[in-house]
Image 1 (cartoon, rainbow, N blue to C red):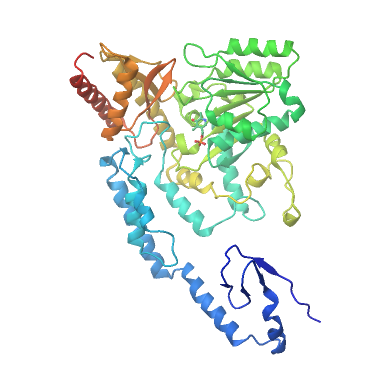
Image 2: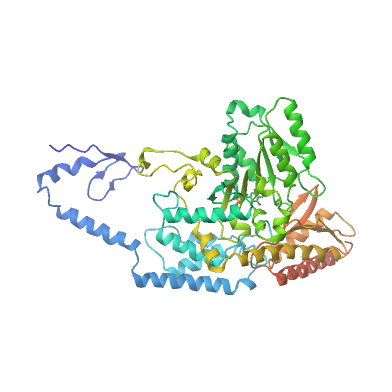
Length: 536
Ligand SMILES: *Cc1c(COP(=O)(O)O)cnc(C)c1O
């Protein structure tokens, strides 16, 4: 005998809601059994006319999710046309656009039942999203840490989305998992890691830092009761995502030792050594050093060989945050600047910075990959069809991260590497380092500038010293003037209470002409400011 299904659905809205011919709702809940009796009375194999009609209607409506071949071509043509227009005008576009009410036009087209035309959608995107704010794709974007956006990766994302391959588990996407492992291995190799290394492609450096701290915590077998006695070592220039990650990893009670910086804005290794010795003498349990390879403020690389020695002697996990700097290990000058990075227990590296990928690409690489897997492997009953990965290198992304379903990130790195080879990446990184030195040398020669240290990688800090008045005030006005002009974009930072301007060369499209153009704009804006207040 058939049993009545006892399903009921809670509906938020108080109105009567038609839920598609199989029930109705007068208020808080729906009784799905209400049509059951009439079902039973009919021929059991015969679907009612109204049901047939309903399914046909729903099918017709849902088929709009699958455009026909000619419609697909039209969509693709519109999108490529849009991209071509964008790319061919990029040189002349502002690197920064401070429009009023940026993006407000989006509200004019609310999410609705009925569609709008593709041209209208792309126009909205252009005007409301692409134009306002920073243009990270621009060769004249020198602010913060510039981004990438190589075209091959855009094509890869398109193909990844169309096939929608699942890259979280080997069972579901063996090729996708292999490809991701291959690009992680490639990064591990150029960072100087051994075969034991494994890693995960994350959405960015912040998540990679989080995974690193959790892996270190699990590897040290730290429990909450140990935290108070287990210090972590950082500097004032450690990226703020590390502090966030500590909070998320639940280790906020660990004492955080801020190691002083030396003259070059790098972690003072001697100070680190004595701090750890003092902590050990006090009966504490030092467990984590976070060094930075390419600080966001000044691009400084902490003294990795010395720090690695200290970490090894004291059995402390060394994590190197190389979100910005680690990709430079691919080129000869960068490799030299990053010597010792291969001795870290884990490294954060952001392909959406120095490997020129579009946003959404970070990575964590762990020297002993098994430690990463030990921290994140989990089983669930509904995944019983998936064979347990062997302990060696059979692991999939889901065994090495917080994520389960996720973007298939490997293809956007693999495809460009296959289509252009490694050489252009290496050349571009070497070029960016040289361009930063070129800028440093040029500005050092101009009267009135105070220039920060010679760049370890590709960030230069500098400021103009006016003859009279507050230099902080003048440089704040200067950065505002450059941003208002918008042709080039730079940002600023504060070092020892000095308001410093900051040029970061990292966009793959930035070449000598763009850096020189920035120097022209810099001098022009200083001239204008001085005209307005002739005493400076
Ligand atoms: C950019 C950066 C981060 C954060 O990475 P996201 O990819 O923005 O999440 C962390 N550390 C350093 C040194 C960085 O430069």
